[in-house]
View 1 (cartoon, rainbow, N blue to C red):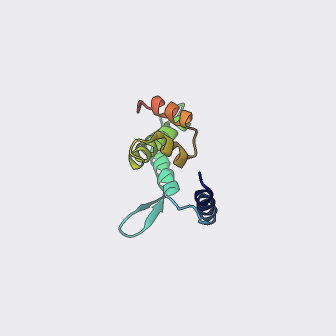
View 2 (cartoon, rainbow, N blue to C red):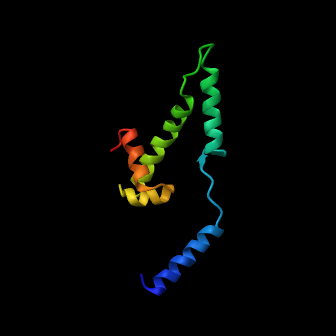
View 3 (cartoon, rainbow, N blue to C red):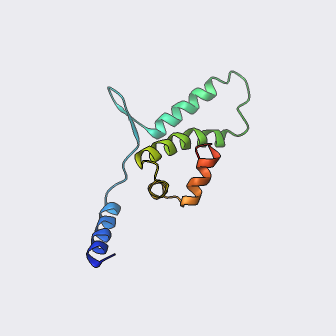
Length: 107
């Protein structure tokens, strides 16, 4: 990488750190709902609908799968299937991304 490209990359990284992280929201006609609020509402509905039954034993893994699968699908679509770029955007090692893709039958 030449020095001009390196300076540009450093400038972009500094600017990226200064910019606040975007909030994940679900836009509705009258308001925006954060991803956290959507998860909270879904979990409340899950527990409300148990009707006296015990919840599953692996609720944590179930919730993670419900979040990870669409996240992985969308990021791969956004990167046109480029796993290296997808892993970078997710902040994961490429091997970890591939492990998750295999785990969910996406590879």
